[in-house]
Amino acid sequence: MRLIALGSHHLTEGLALLGFETIPGADSAAVERLLEGLCKGGEAAMVLLEDHLARAGGLWLDRVRMRESRIVVVEIPPLSAPRDYHPAVEDLVRRVLGASALEGPK
Image (cartoon, rainbow, N blue to C red; front, side):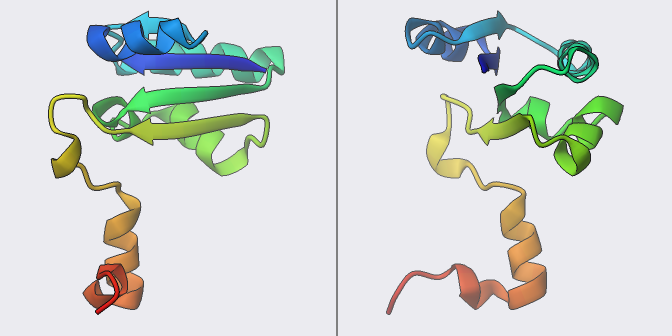
């Protein structure tokens, strides 16, 4: 299984130390090219995407999220503002279960 990280130079530099293949300074087109190659090559991979790349969308990103079981895409927060980060799934949880579902224990 390949471990691949795309995002800012600082983020990818740290992940390279952990053994990830990295694509620093990637844009959404780079994400699409990578995912297309992984899908067509039948490769298994875990792909870490900085939040702005994970939310950019795209044909191959959407396909991987909906249909590919060999490729796991993980959204990670930006290094510059980790406390301000809110994953996109929080919006879905709020719509379906209400805002109280995200509150901690009282």
